[in-house]
Image 1 (cartoon, one colour):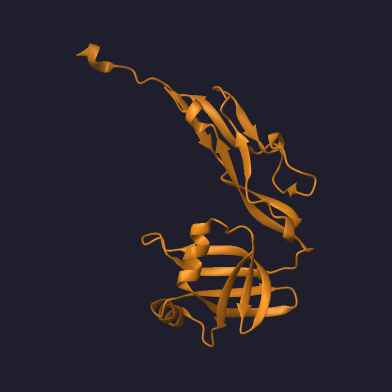
Image 2 (cartoon, rainbow, N blue to C red; image 1 turned 90 degrees about the vertical axis):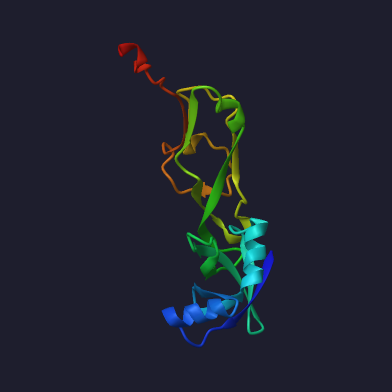
Length: 190
């Protein structure tokens, strides 16, 4: 579990958030059952390390003034131009608490079907699962290398353990494979 050190922010608001970012921090909040929303700031370098690790859908330990909180990252706001993290939301949880978390879907074998005039359309990049906070899967991976035009992957097709419940409708399409259409050559009509 990754650990992030943070400090309580005494002021909140747009101007304060800009100042916090200029000082090398990421403004954030932590909330949860039995606590008031607490504004904090995280060291920007620690956040960048967390983002590079790709471990953003698992639990983290958030140290705030010497007190440790187990938390789930609920939202990461990114500047669309610089791609820098500008704000984070954390939800305080316990390992044995049931929560809903977003888990990425990874499709392997794309290179075998994206040839010629065949197109893969991935409608869902992540699914919401209900599980214990200490059992959040890192990802769901599905091999689509054998897919042909007309094949679809639905939520119901995914294999996962009994410890998870996928919140989406089982008939929700995750990805589909279609044959492309050739563009008619109009040069003969000249």
